[in-house]
Length: 208
Ligand code: GRF
Image 1 (cartoon, rainbow, N blue to C red):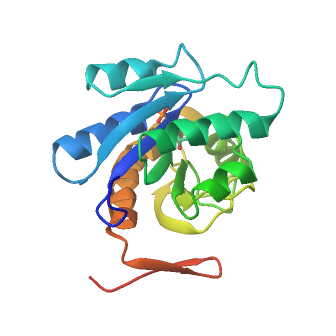
Image 2 (cartoon, rainbow, N blue to C red):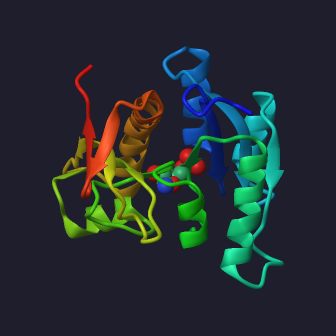
């Protein structure tokens, strides 16, 4: 068995493009992130991110929710596959399925997500478009712990992005994505380093 304190094995869950997955792969290669991606699980077999994982020599698995009558059953299969590979931290990266309490309880304070807005503003899908349509002047990206409620767990890291007058939802999304690619690996590194605790909703970090 892997020692819990030294285990830096990640399980990355995707459904699509996989650019955040690629950012993690790059960060590991450049030694900005001290971790190993043990497995990439996709809810869709046509996810582009699967090719990125394969190119990097990472084990991949396609687990579609179709074929499971209940969400809890799908969640249990995910948990089993992640545990089999001794994953310590689960990183959602564009994973388009809602995870239920069974999953979240199986990995207490060990599931992260990245969301393309400054939460709690604009949860849910198309957050960048929501922000643009609302007319905010600042949006950004948030890395947070996952709870059974959508996009509302304790916040690990956030970074702001200025909305420019000439922005479209697409140009804004592209600038936020660039920020995501730096923010997510850095937040994963912080969480793996373990010098933090959660008080109420707040993630408190020890001084370096
Ligand atoms: C990102 O914008 C992320 O914030 C959101 O889904 C998108 C995934 O993009 N949760 P990618 O698959 O990592 O390229």
